[in-house]
Amino acid sequence: MSTTVKDMLATYPADLGDVDRKKLTRCIEECIACAQACTACADACLSEGMVGDLTKCIRTDMDCADICNATASVLSRHTGYDANVTRAMLTACATACRACADECSSHASMHEHCRLCAETCHSCEQACNELLQALG
Amino acid sequence: MSTTVKDMLATYPADLGDVDRKKLTRCIEECIACAQACTACADACLSEGMVGDLTKCIRTDMDCADICNATASVLSRHTGYDANVTRAMLTACATACRACADECSSHASMHEHCRLCAETCHSCEQACNELLQALG
Amino acid sequence: MSTTVKDMLATYPADLGDVDRKKLTRCIEECIACAQACTACADACLSEGMVGDLTKCIRTDMDCADICNATASVLSRHTGYDANVTRAMLTACATACRACADECSSHASMHEHCRLCAETCHSCEQACNELLQALG
Amino acid sequence: MSTTVKDMLATYPADLGDVDRKKLTRCIEECIACAQACTACADACLSEGMVGDLTKCIRTDMDCADICNATASVLSRHTGYDANVTRAMLTACATACRACADECSSHASMHEHCRLCAETCHSCEQACNELLQALG
Image 1 (cartoon, rainbow over the protein chains, first blue to last red):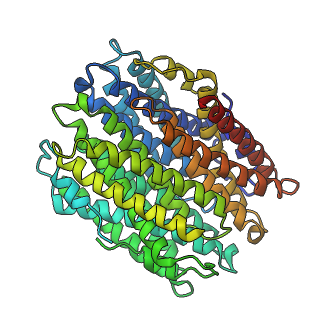
Image 2 (cartoon, helix red, strand yellow; image 1 turned 45 degrees about the vertical axis):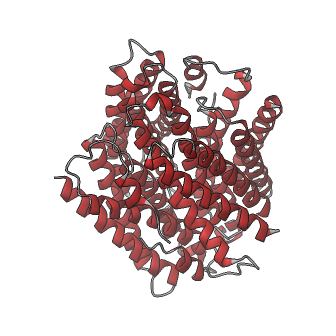
């Protein structure tokens, strides 16, 4: 799949300030990929015979999906930029991704969807933290 | 309108811990009301003749709506509770509501939707902060 | 809880056309209440000992929550109104609410959250269908 | 960007029925790319000097983003599959994408973000319609 995150960013008609476009692009891409992976992982967990052992995983997946989607939307807007809101959402997103990566990792040896979802969450957490640092 | 937030909370079949149910209920209700008010305010701003003066307001409304909706979802889940995720989202939500209340307030004397939206955001910010304090 | 749906609608600065404001207001309120109830029901199902019997219910709840939230947002906008989009979303929302009401009803005698959620979905389905008819 | 849509689908532990996995994967990918492009286009429109001419475009973008996100979530779930809900959401999504492609196209010669967004919406509309046909 190729998204248009980078191309859309390039068409923004006003000043983007001194944001690191590469890190911003990557972070948006990671957030939307992570939201989808978490939604799919929650659903895959529901179809496991041992779903009773995966209820915390399903919940963590759902939170992470909701938070990643909201973060992707906030990061896709540049008009009237508010650094405090962006930083608070990146912090929340990194926290949710960390929690989901930890929980999914604990099931990774038994469930391939959890292994893959943990990887995606870990990568998204990194992207959020790198963008946070770049924002200063 | 009457939502079923309080009644649904009462049917949760497992232990809710020592959460303050009143503050939790109020916070969920404020988040979903605030998300709707912000979506409506962004749209009302779009139909003002002076929309060019309201672009920061529209953007702040959209962020606030997305973040309030995600926060309402996180707060509506209790299974596998993670205090760090809840706290980070409440902080992000209070930050977004504060930013939106400030921005809408500055247009309140000219636009009734901004005045009403500022009130709703202010009330939601309070509810988030009170729940944050209650969580310890 | 009191939302500001009706009050926000009253502040819209441009022409609303000949929409039935009462039915529109009720439908938005029902959608946001239903989204919250479905999110809470999915989570309550996750904490039931017999979660393995509730996986279809959890999935139906999650779909219904996502679709109700999107419908509430579409209905909260009036600028550049497109009747085809509104009708298609109301149809999708009524379909999801019907499916969720049916599924939750089948667990209503055992789980109070399913009974309450089925009621909320049924009420939201009605509101969507009544608004659809009013739109012509 | 590479999403994990296809890989996550491959890990689903239960029967997927006779769904066309290629068309399903493409449709999910198109929906999440389109939601992001529409969010970015709405924001870019807000920063154009002639924002007053773009209010219908901004609204259509916002609807399309919300509907694409909800559709991606519904399509990412397979447990307790309900063909009626899937079909209704694909129909709503194709309708919203068509409306947004049409509106953005009318500004494409002046605004590169509208040109790019129209392309993305058109591609997503096609993917929704192809999946609809494959579902029978």
